[in-house]
Each structure stands twice: as structure tokens, then as C-alpha cells.
Length: 267
Image (cartoon, rainbow, N blue to C red):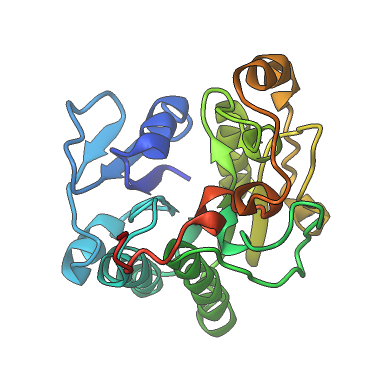
């Protein structure tokens, strides 16, 4: 791997990987519709709208792998989700196929399975239970990844990212937290593995409370090293006791599971 494309490179996770992966490969090609700032050493900046297939073909040409973070990262209207997350993800996979089958890391989400209850430990065979239109778009992306591998041998790993921040922000994140270093190591493992097929992996650190089982993806060689436990006392002191009849507590998707349908009038 000499050149890796990162879509959504101006977003939160994209900015993290831009700094964390510097020097890991010869060139990071960074793309977004938002301002990417100044071009640094070992970087290429190529703005592109993922809804424009011609632009996506241009940014994929000549890369060895793709970290696909681009798209809407929160709930939105169906049209917005359709254009950015569904059409944009299709364009990435189709451009990868047309350019020779580049390996893809697809940023899926825990919201693809957000209506499972928190007491249910999920594994690689657990069914989708999206908690939002955003979650539905991630189910689409994971199924698209499977289709492109089965029909065209385009390899990918769909990472159901929990909550990737410098530290957990609330009690739910004590279970879903994914440290920046663990996320970086996961991305590296995905592109350094000899073969990945079409795999899904849950993105969470080695936290005390575990909702997700990654034994099906052990061949990737990723073992999270960090734990949210060092933040527990701080989080519990700052936040109230959970109310177990609250859908945001009962379901793994948290506030996404509790929220109403985005298209409805809030009144």
C-alpha cells in the first residue's frame, strides 16, 4: 500500500486519521466537499462531491485502498441520506470495481444494529436492527459491500463504529467507546491483512461493558488495547443514574433509538 484515499477527510474521523496515519503510507489522498486546509507532507488534496460519479472516479484512480468515511454522519431527511450515504457509497464501490477492485474500509455504524437491547451480546451473525434512516443507510452499505465481493471480488471491511472520541462523553459510551489509537490500529490491520473478503467488525475498545463479539473477525489481527474504564468515575460523577425504561438506555442505539422519525413535524 503506497497511496490510500480517505473520503470525508475534513470530518471528525477523517481529521483524526489524517494525523494518525501520516507516514504510514507514502501518500494520503484526502477528499471532501468541505475545506481541507493546507496540503501537508505526503498528502494530496482533491475535493470531490460523492454524489458526482465522475468526481469519484477521479479520486479513486491510482490509489491502493480506500477509507470511506464520507457522507452524513447523523440522522437526516431521506433525500439527504439517499444522496450522501446511499448514492455516495455506491459510487465508491463502483469506482473501486472499475479501477481494479481496490480494498475498502467502509465506515458503518452501531446504528445499523441500534434496536437490539443492551443486554444482548451481538456477533457476526446478529441481524440488522437499524434505529434511524442513517442506520438504514449503513445496512445498505454493508449489503453493498457483500454484493461487490460476491460478484466482483472487491474486498472490504465494514466497521460498525461505536463512539470514537478522545474520551467517552456519557455513560453509554463506557460500552461503545473506540479510542483514537485503537481505531487507527484497526484501519492499519484492514489494509495490512493478506485477505479480508467482505467482513464486518464492531468498532469498540476493550471496555469493561461489552455488547459486541468480534471473534468472527479475529483473522484481521486487531486486538483493542484501550479501555473506557479509566474514565468511569468521571463520567458517573457528571451524569445521572440511568433510567432503565428510557429507550435511550434500553437500546444499544441510545438517543437514535429514542428519537422520533426525522421527517415528522416536531410539533
